[in-house]
Image (cartoon, rainbow over all chains, first blue to last red; front, side, top):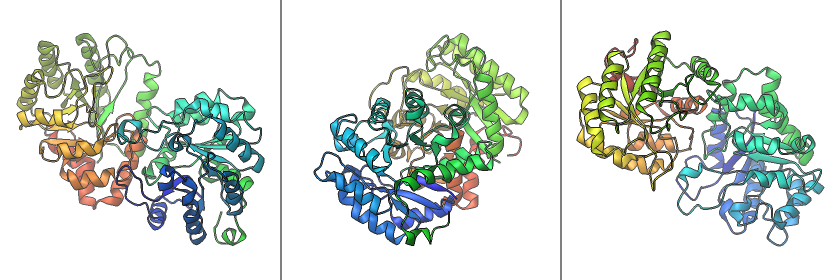
Length: 271
Length: 266
């Protein structure tokens, strides 16, 4: 079982990206043996009302049993609190917020309120450090990257909040992990999409220093080739249990406490 | 056969005290991926006693010598680029002779001098005379100067390539940062410029664009600092290309532009 917690559907505004439709995503998942993908609606990251993409996302994931929705929440817009409840009802394993793309302070009052609500609702919050390499971004793509101090600050807001952080590199990850208490760090999961493999061996180092329990399989596809995260694991000497933890069990544990899958979905998807 | 045209090794005078582990890791990962030959360079002292991209003559000699020893120690698994700094012309030309005579198979120009500068011309004439390619460090679409290097982009390398049509140039790490879309447009009509696919970038659509705009005959596979991303791109190319075209990218193009008999199984 392999779960990709970091996938997108929909067009990217800053360059041509092939394979952004749900059907193309499923084909890519087949290519790299991903059983389930947690998907976000990519265009709405850049919309003034990001949640306007959520209905499409829910409709798509209802039709396609291997896809699970990660809906967007903009905590600066009226009525955002209902979106967290709605996400739970729709079986979302997490909600996402991209504060720098929304023009929000990553540690400002809106984010603090969202984090508190996610803690109260036991809904994991997905935060992306970046979507693309900063060196290649479109000249008008100027939203800042999520800084590590934002994660350190936000994890302290509510004792039950849990984060799924994507697209983080080793130095970011270490700064947050070792800049948090063990209890705080245990509520953060990291996808492996931006962590380097050999010869620098950042992922191997982190699995030893931070712990296998903190890592989940993510790719960032279709903006990035999903083969990369599979290759990272293939280059490690992991036991079957360790690999299974990264590829599915850690993610499943996040999801199970967030939103139990609807019965209709559970009956169709092997785990 | 699989040739990584963009590899690096570290040495005991580099700032990294884990240099042995990193070198061993590269070779170990290479075995798993199936890399037959690592074509590598060592950029001076890697910043210990002179800047990475502006290496001193002494550091260049030490790094090149270390790499020659690695090449001897590992048989056919490692081949070397001679690193030179064009600002030290006499030294650069002498160092090329020394290293190529000793068995290196190419020249590495990093970012000591802009690619279109006339100081690079004698080095390229030497490359033509010796029949070796030049791997040139590239920032994809250089919009400004960057600290620590006199970086060049595809337009600047293209100018050099047009002055030296007998030399094959490897445009370094198309996936190594910067706007690769700009590079594809700039390199399209430069028949003696080959794109090295290395770099940490694994952008969806990048390989398709390389194939469409440059063509499989001018793509060469490599890893640079991240073998995981190199392997990912190779796996995707296996999906994207027919077997014969995949072979071109994986090794046949490299075997064509490096000196005859540079690789045992070519």
